Image (cartoon, rainbow, N blue to C red; front, side):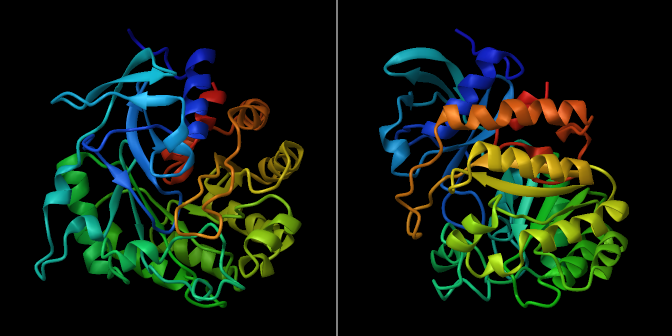
Length: 369
């Protein structure tokens, strides 16, 4: 039994359903997982219908999902069940080879950068944020401190460490792009300076497309400096579509308003190129489908790719019990958004580096087809 390809209606529906409901797994599935951390997390990487995607497995909702995975065989292949009935086979990719290496001072490479999706390397350069310690200002969905507290990462990755790991990931595992994100270290450059320093070192070591991600810096001149440092694309993540939801869910970050983001996007697109500036939007935080699509229309008109993903509540955060968006909600957003992107000839496959190119946290790319 095989699963239909992701580009078909049934394939799109299956992946959208999986990412909304999550997946029940056994204790010994192996493969690649991510728990806690700065971005979408509590996932496991699976390959389904020829596409590598991230599916929630460690959330409370996933424990009640209609989807289950049978114990995988020695090759990582498992039977996917829905309500006890076999749907097809899925595959749990093995950990990449670079995970087995360490720096000269004994830091495992996987504490410096992780594989996301099929072939994207990702890291949080500064695993701290000026807002995280105070729940009056922190993003209620964020778990940036959890992986640090659990000793699954280090607080700051030096440019030399990032270059070393990136080179190994390319040579050993065929990594094709890299994402550099950061907690916000200050309210001036908002992390752009450390990202530029990191990008410069990586590009000196290996030819690897890079996306850098930060809040809009006060000085938009940083966009040109980031480009000159080697960044191929830029992510500035709104997270929510409306200012009201942003103020409720991320009171500190919301002080940088939607309008200020739009001004920053308008400055960045001429430097990075149409479609090479992206923003991450978490569906299910309180915005309606109409809110998300209205914002997406504005973003696409500016040349910004809106990467819409289903919100996944992370354990240990204020939103850990927040109900994720239903599969129907996601389809009501992704289907028209896919049409909008097709009509604008703005596709994830044209993004040089970053979350939109990786596409593992959303089935959006399937709706572009």
